[in-house]
Image 1 (cartoon, helix red, strand yellow):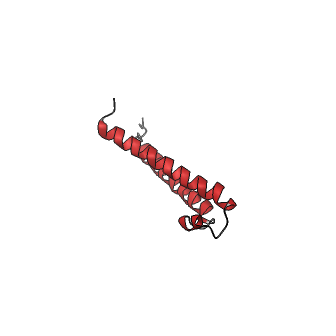
Image 2: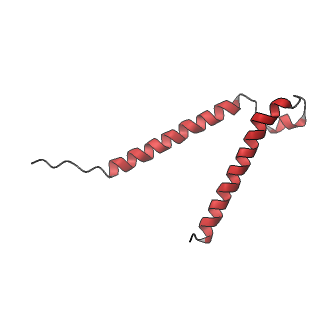
Image 3: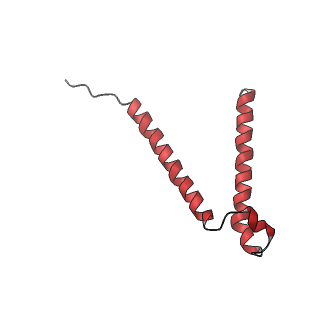
Length: 83
């Protein structure tokens, strides 16, 4: 069973992900149908960033996964025995 700290960290990650998903969904799906002079547009970045930010996040994620994989493979590398 997970400790209280682990459960709190997990719940905070779930809440953060839910808020981020909701914000992005409103930004990308709802905002184009709202008038441009509506106050809701002041709460969001320009639409160009709705493509740029996830792309940058994906590149950073792939770099981190690649660095982690390379580190694990490098640490577990066993030199070949020469007969």
